[in-house]
Length: 441
Ligand code: SAH
Ligand code: SF4
Ligand code: F3S
Image 1: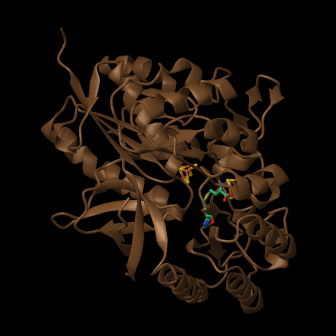
Image 2 (image 1 turned 180 degrees about the vertical axis):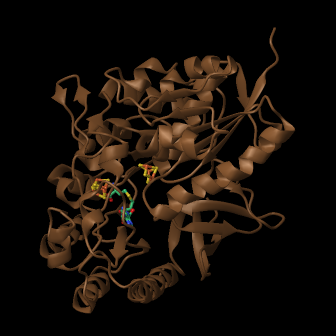
């Protein structure tokens, strides 16, 4: 029997890449590879990449430069690039870094085993097709090994929204929803393997409209079906687009006890002028009204957002509109970025805002967000939450888990083990986490 080979995967970018990396490792398992955490031991190194901002893409090339050195020590080592940089730049990657043997896009990685056989013959392999077949149908069913208490599950991919700044519609392709029965089977399978919390993933997850027993299902309907799965305790989903926040989904936040009170709802900007130029197809007011309706259904929901500052033609007044939208909404969590011009997107042609000015705006916005995050965290002190324990903490006897609001909670002197879902009283708010004590059952 041939020796087992070792595969090292490094994942960049969003949660969907985390999920894809798991699926790629499984696909390569069928081709005789087992996963390793040590790149020095690997027979194959795969970078699962992100193209969302220039920095993210450049990181890949500097990492490839470093990995070239590994090839000097181990001439049999194979290097592959997967994910969104692979999709966007294709052959260009091999031109810029000849040490790369394989380039595979996010919609064709079910073909990895065939591609691996090809590169073992000394050839190069490139596949950035958007194939007709569904990669998830082609991938073997998932292995039965025990796993941790939380998991991602991709239900929808791609994006038809074409925000003027964004590469995702080009790197991931058009919106596609996976069929209901495949998702339910995968979810039950995950639960059998120890998973208690599933985060449903999609670039526009709430645009989900997968085929079910009686026509197309909405995300809310899918969530209600998952609610019936015994042993599954928590359901989350990300990322949502404001325009696809349908009534049944808002209502589910108020009535479905397994659906966690946390919602990532990016708005990008608070200025109507900029939202229009971004081609966001919602305005400031419709977003604020939507937030009101969501909070009416679930008053304690924790909202998280994404913001871009320094988008072309953003003035100080536009930026102030973003700041006062943040003041109005009050986010428990937010991700903010300086606009990065991406080749091939409509906004790439437009004049940039002065870089120093954009950096200054980013700092001011992040200051406000940090302040809000901290205020919301501080307001948790004295409250009882449920914590799903995920791993040991840094100190002896300490465990770490997440509350229903996705706050990291550290608990000392606990008998809780990984996978337990227990009540905890919050006693302290720290920079990026909460401290709690167990509440006796
Ligand atoms: N589908 C998700 C976003 C995926 S990208 C959604 O619509 O919310 C994640 C975030 O990266 C975006 O929300 C946006 O804030 C940021 N982003 C995307 N393109 C960017 C660019 N060109 N420059 C800076 N930030 C960008
Ligand atoms: Fe990108 Fe906009 Fe689609 Fe989100 S909705 S993935 S920001 S194009
Ligand atoms: Fe990045 Fe692709 Fe995700 S560009 S954010 S890895 S969809």
